[in-house]
Image (cartoon, rainbow over all chains, first blue to last red; front, side, top):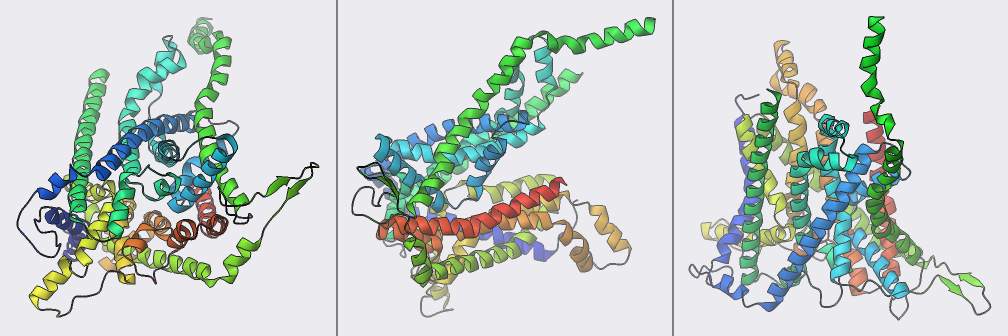
Length: 276
Length: 318
């Protein structure tokens, strides 16, 4: 539906995109400011990036967040995919309504409520059975709970649209149902699994509210450290850290998008070749 | 006769699945290996915690770890005592800060959603009208901020609107103002933060509906003599209602429970419920009252939304 677009629409679009990008670009600009005073331009410098490498508090927190992110996204993809398979493939089972509700609820639940309720659970569990101690474990569990909801929604739509004829053919040829699923349908939903892993990873890496509630002493994730520093005002090393993270995530998303599009095109091409 | 044999031959492969009753039995049981892990995990770590919050909202504060009293206690002669303390909920109604912050959150979320819609609708409309290749680039441009850290983006906004930030420096330099504008720690900053953070959530679902719009309807309206603005109001707008609802929910829901934005950008007046909850928990360490606030918030806010979505999906199915 290409046609002339009114100048009004174009200008609103430009304003909207400007609102989204100017703060980030300005932040990246500030990160190269030699002056510690944010309002004064003291010349180009990469010293704040160098300083990051010597800041143990930030490095420890970043390492903890990365570890949590990898465990959480892997766990969330496994649980979320199982939930998606359950909802798409098994039309009737006891607990279906419950599962549907529980995978959709985290998407509309304010983080602060999820955080408080999970903290109360962990504290009571520790009181009653001596496990889990607040820290890495509790953050991982809490993050998996809300990330798996996003995974389920993503994979569910992909799985519902997947063609089952290949899987049925594999079963007719003697494969067991699990084997047939792994050989035929799984490669088809692989892009959805990869993108939901990436989504879980960024959600986990970015979470402040839930982590703050369920974390214990000594386990500060990167957002928690950033938040406590930012509350006190602007600090130049956070500018450098923020620029680094934003560029890294941006590059990863662009690369992943590119790879997935290429894989998808290849798959379509293969399918066309197979039909001939 | 031949027809009958032919028929038989055709039907034969269909009987194949029946030859493995044992495998079918296993398959019927095996599905629980797939269903149970996510079901149990979410039950224990997502749903049951709400039960704990409900129970603790009826407890008293206590100076111990964890900082609340037991509701169930067993006396030495095996009498089970149930102590329900309704004081926390009474307290919510007597101290007006809770009611006010709830209303204030509703108001802030509502107006931010309206502004996001006013800004996001033309954006989505413009994107939907470009060519397919431009569309994919523009969509990427809109989605990319959503992937980058929310906390860091709020922080980045602070770099612009601070007293010594870019905006004030530029305006002072241009001579438009002579005193730096106080934007940080105001209600305006909170709105700006919410709109900045959640605008992509509004644009994407709107684009999805507007893109699918059947353009011949607009042409028909034009052929019948309807001016473009009227065709928009009578054709495009009603047809894009699902996108408007979806986008508004995606902005309104996170905005109402927002904690980071009012804390970092807002002033002491911007008491949104998320901030009150946080302070009650970490500042006052009053866990029972915080639980009561959370339960009340849940009933008053998430309940209606869940019901609405439930009926909405029912209607769509029908």
